[in-house]
Length: 417
Ligand SMILES: *Cc1c(COP(=O)(O)O)cnc(C)c1O
Image 1 (cartoon, helix red, strand yellow):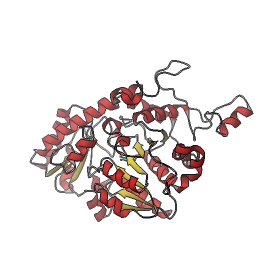
Image 2: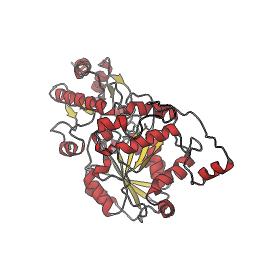
Image 3: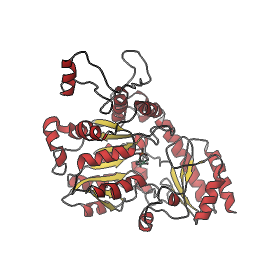
Image 4: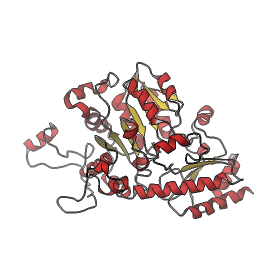
């Protein structure tokens, strides 16, 4: 049976590799080698010329990283993937492969703070402009399209707003205008959502989060779904490569130009840690999500909390879209509003086991105050667009027992009395 017909629970354990052909090792080997030797000058020349497959130098490719890329490609039923040192490196490389000075990109406004800053400040300095639009309104993407539009970027689950864009509707707009749709699937992972099935052309991951799962290695990945025609008038930077390698143009641009030139390669050791994490992705996501629903329901009946946002609650404005897109589970981010910064800090300081830190997708439950941390640099208007105010607390629910997490939150909420 081909990989794509297996359930995700099985794919994460068996897809794309079984055992090392030389040693029988079933865990992927760590190749901490900077470069790779060949028997003759002719052999190495053939690899450089692209006539023979082979590893050259670990900034370009590496056998450990390659196995990880193959497994990820199988999970999302893609054409291929390029791993990066971080999620930000993956997003930067994707945009630079598709856009240059004088171009415009369109992005949902409710996105990860680092990505917002990259688009808003860093890219604008080199002449790539971003139009931020209301994330969940497909028509707002259409309205922002110009002759210079090179890509549309969207996240599967806005953070910390926790809004859920209708990817099918946005993909229809992108397709109509021959614009590639880039979907950041970090918060949902292939366990909840396979972006290709909803019309994504390129998938981005920060593997630092749920894919790694244990908060021990930063990493990123770019995956080409194989759905986009890279000879589109929108993707001019890829036309030369398209003439040579056809549908591999985007991946070839990343591998042989962008990621190679910038040096976005991950450490094979970090890749190894992430590859191990993926084995348990499906069961972890189940627990993350089941815990979250239980906690969100309990908190929404708690009088000490003004508002609870979680896409799994029927009261959530995007519940229907989330239900359709997320495989009947709703992710592991919850926000609660307790009114003021003072009260939010009291709750955050009052918990014992839940860790106060800026991450998500860890086995451990995590808690943070967005307005004073990762949304600190945003203007008042931007914060409002992101759904952030002074009383907001974000929880990244871990895989501990739900009742213990609830008891800990109760310990924090008692500080409000
Ligand atoms: C964390 C995150 C990123 C950035 O990834 P890093 O690995 O931290 O560079 C990008 N997108 C989303 C949705 C994220 O949560």
